[in-house]
Length: 402
Image (spheres, rainbow, N blue to C red):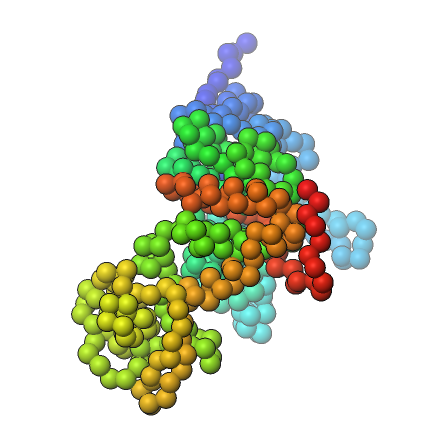
């Protein structure tokens, strides 16, 4: 008998977004084994789904060719008939092209599987490019209920989707509704390595998840009250000066003035004529610029966010005062940070504890940990983007039962 030809190939598991590095064993062209690849950046571990790759690849029920339905959809027997890939793609292309020619590309809808738990993740961007080139605005995604808010809420709030956490360089890792030990093994391995080097871990989760088991702080938030906890933590950080004020002034919209009458940012073009700032200073007074309180001069000046601010420490974060406009009228304005601080101040620790069911001492302890950490990395998932702040009930707040 001829000896088996055994090969080992390095790659990664594509069955979820973790993309765990793996070594695959091939015997006579057949996948027979898979194990983690420690030399790969994400190869520290593999889940049971990844380890079952040989069963998936060679399962007797796996489809290996496209199928064409030959009976009506009302028939219990679809009458599937195998066809070639070229035939299937040619027929589909012909049909969608005919629909587009007759009714416009908007008449065609595309469905895409979840990028989080299937092999489509590596192809999602290419699929989207094809859909946009085709001309259809209709894309139906099959994402998990926990996924969309994570991407969309952060994109609308910060201008970009949430970035991967940098566990290795963090003094504190804050996981909010995120359990990488069960959903993202590559991150779980990176977090474990960081903890071994001294990174502390805080977990916000109603369940005592696998990640929460090894956390320094586990905040068992009442479902639906995540926003109250976030506001309460921010209030403590602002009240005690535990936030990075220099960063807030220079890299956020916190100093930008908000009009009290419209709730919109005050534009530099609304200010009386005056000298424009220099290229390295507050920026131009064009329509694209905004306005800030200059604590050094005591006046209001233009601030173009497209340029690097010179000495941002001079821009006020707090207070409210009237501002004279170009037409001679006056309107009360306050920095965006002032509005944020007021919203947070409405959630002192006792109210947060009563609403979230988290003991006040635990809320204060996490706020202190955040303030003390030289750097904090954060990742949020389930809960943080789809849990509204509950309205205040009438009467006194109920006592905390935990």
